[in-house]
Image (cartoon, rainbow, N blue to C red; front, side, top):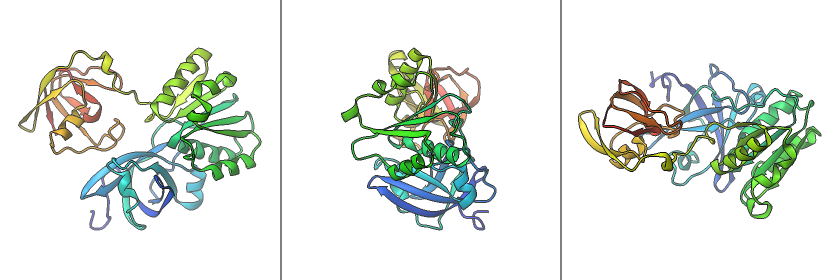
Length: 327
């Protein structure tokens, strides 16, 4: 099949790269044209993007940084990402040439603009601005920001705010949208800017530190809070784990010692074992495998599996007992 349809993968959609542009030295914009069968997204949703890096398919999750109206009118979608030089995918995006075929998943996620008569407060940190650009684009295009005001607090490092011209253009289209460009160095932490919005519906997308600060204030204020799923994934709480223990991991007839402090994926990688993986956050399921026996802990929820055979994701699983898996 791949001879006739390059980059074809079962369960994914093909998309052709239209353009890759530098927004800043470490920020890229990627324009993709999905195949016609791709189900259009709701502003705020994300997709998994797979490209071939050094002969290996690599997957990462990106928010679609445009509204559905943009896709409807141009047949294209836009991704915006910060380039992590140590990353597995983003350092290679700039070398992807137009007309290259890549794989994308169907749109996923529930982080969308709420249907509410309450004011909306958006809190963005760094590249967390992207879902809000998409939401605002569609909300203004579809005349949805007329019932209550929307205010955006956009935190970034000094001189690293992106898409400012687009924010200004959106503000000119409606009096009900305002925004503030903030830096922690000059304006302090986000908590200091939330007290006037207790009656609003809060949305936050950004680093986990911002999410935790906003979550704490939201609880005290009784504010409704939605957060971007992949940004709000809990970090493994080492303090809640028992003392470091070592277990035996059997995979495909090989034996490996693993501990209960790191994910199974990271320990297999450190042992240079061949393993397929993608987002590393439990979203794309690229590292899913069959656990034949033993108990693992889900690092997102702390939930323990039973000891029977079941599917697990290596990136969000830690050993609790001796294990056997089938890669």
